[in-house]
Figure: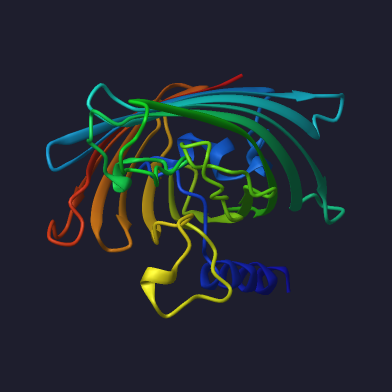
Length: 324
């Protein structure tokens, strides 16, 4: 019965996948940006994460870096707090930003055998950004889209700046039994619809955005396991969408996509993993990871477009995760 419920939840989340957009290949290395419920979702007392991504298209580059720290508190370790900092931008890119986040979560078991777990999380963040008009080099596919620049006619300033407070909610479910583990996470961001136009004079507001991620892991034996994963997002959520694209609100860039992955994990003296991923069948990625010790894992990734006529973004990424 529980397995049927798990499968049903997976299908439900997949069919309704719409989400937030940190557009990096190694999305598992930024757990606090996928869902606040991921805070403390690891085996141990403390987790530190760091990642770097270089996105390129049409000889234009942008960089995204993130660091995070989570710590479990209390005797039962059921509550956790986390902090994160992200930075996007490059010398040649018009838009740049800094993102500070503080999150907290708690969990409780749904059965006596402690095989099913429900997690709830909340996050508050302070986001600041700037746009340099004179650079005139911008590509929304390379940006995290925390701000939008709409007034591009006769600007009175070369550098525009803005900031806002943001809030997010998270929900997570995990079922684990013997050699099977299933996880599902939902993150709801921009719940108070902050104004996010880089030009403070404009009133453009962010809509609520959702991120869904799911994973299913099956261990064949003590050494080998395979993991299927998926995460999805959409830039803006439309309940009553106009058929005329010119009438769409400015708070969405109409970016909607999913990343599907298949990962093989090998345990042993030096554990390692190898995975292949696809971004809405527009690109293909290869991710390789190795654990130098029981608590330290490094990953490297590279993403290439499958048809540059429709999607021409390539990406290189590295990440490091340490758990105590």
